[in-house]
Length: 129
Length: 373
Image 1 (cartoon, rainbow over the protein chains, first blue to last red):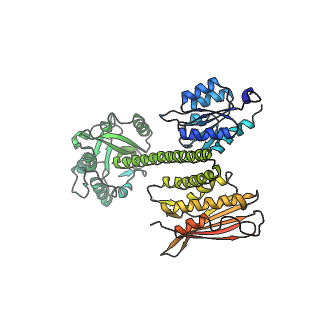
Image 2: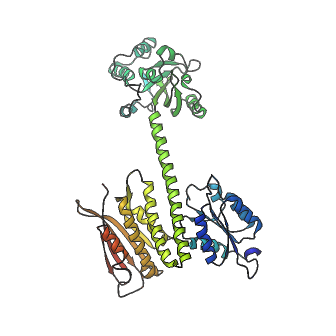
Image 3: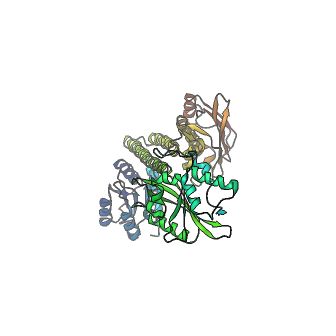
């Protein structure tokens, strides 16, 4: 994937989706600490817009987004584009089978933000550039 | 002489007596003579019962609280030819309204066609079947009917009747629904609690980052998250008011052994009250952090065995936890936080810890009062 490093000077972009702003804030810091550029989304539409308009390298997706919404559509889009993602969820048991079947790395909530980001980047590191 | 299929559940009679009866459908057992039994015998003189067993059978039919009916398998549409008192009582119909009709007159809009089909197939195969079907009384009220149907053969093995027993299981169904509801509620609560701990963790983290005290924030956060894991296990058992100690211990220590190869657990189903869980969880978290820093979990070969059991006296029982490290880096003295937070916490809970350094790891025994009454 050529978008892994858009240019030698530009850091890779990480999409972070969570309907809880405080968790989003924490993850945003952690992504910055890892030397990447966070692109944050609070809901599904925002995340889809980001995916369409930016070349992202990896994503951290909260599974259940409230009001019965899940991240499934974003996950499908990313999977189709070959972008790795982790599913960050407090509800591994109840999670929609459709989302689980997409094959993202599962990271249970709560996990320290630095670890969540490390898991997201780890799937990136093993990918052939 | 009749031979009832062995699978026909006359033995259920004993269990039934323990079940509460619904209001308005009081127990009619032990009331006298049921004329329906006599009438049936008069109309079916060929099916007489011999001697004492015949008398017992008639009394059983009349007095059982299980609704029972017999159908004629050879007449068109399998009409009921006998219904005992309990059947009439359960359904609210009189004998003349029952006899001659197919059992389906009890069905209504809420009766599941799949269950009816299952019943129909079993009858066609002369099979025994149990279904739960929503049925309706004469007054229109619905009840869940556990319907047991089977063939009755004569001495020559010829099918003579279809036997049907009915039992109102509405209360059982309601209890089952309550249980499901409670389970759903516990799961929702668990989900929300995990999310809440995740949010608390985020707040501690970014506060620490913005204040430039990431290390301190991390230490605080790790303790909070350990507490969250310890409490998480309490939700599954919330109705019992106690926690399984081993479950809490495993939950607290799980992140320190992601592959499940370094920490061995040994204990029984010892239970404790919720209040002990916080101290217990945090103490083990601190021991694990120490072990990772300079104990057995600092080296690849090191292991920890954690055991828990009931100890102390019958009057003053305690939870005893043994933490035994092995295979760690050789060291002469006891490193770590002796006199630190674990000592303070356990002391406050009227418990204690004894630490001993064995050269390749820590041996610690912890005590905390067991309150599980």
